[in-house]
Image 1 (cartoon, helix red, strand yellow):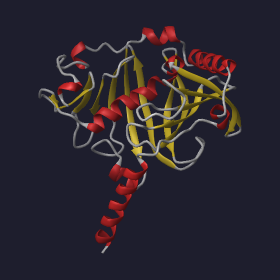
Image 2 (cartoon, one colour):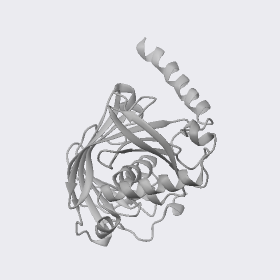
Image 3 (tube, helix red, strand yellow):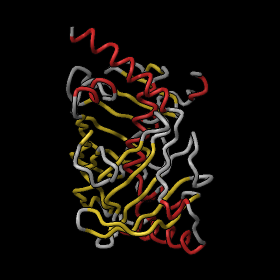
Length: 289
């Protein structure tokens, strides 16, 4: 009986998601929708550059070419783990290796049934590599979305200041602190099918980005996410949030956790051979289409 009731429900959810996928979420505050000034643009850009300095500064960041991050990703609830968990097992430790400033990275499972297996992306081509075997390139939507996304959040304070659209969106109070809010996007501030919008919340107390509200166009146009950055630690001169929590709410200070990424360790400047990021330099995503 349970299975018979669940199947129509799952179909209904899927159809509803397809219907909503045509609706583009718009996280612009009313202050931006109604118009903004050159001063708002200048203030927004200045705040993001100041935040970048608080996170360690562009010079020290660029000096680090690579990063090695040991992390776990804890997805909560049956539905999320069934339909959205990108990894073979929940909370499995992963060694993520990033070539900073690019979208090329790889993740190695350190425990579980896939221990030693590598999932990687190079030139947007995705591959899996079992221990002792050659990498097998095959189109994989989970790898193509999640590996660059996790790297993007890791590098966020050093990306957003250089976005095409940066606008000061006023102030807000979250968890008893006052934040300057900056809207970020590309091409135009209006909703676009292929381009995300971001609202960054910069602490007036620390200068760090504590909260982020964002769209997820690569999955469904209607999805809006909320990220909380906490447990900041100094790693080789860079301020790194060792806890990244995605919550379900209309505001980024919500309490209902959807999933949480915990960093166990972070090391910059790891000496990795070129083949670590480009096991087959000839492979590119367009060859998989």
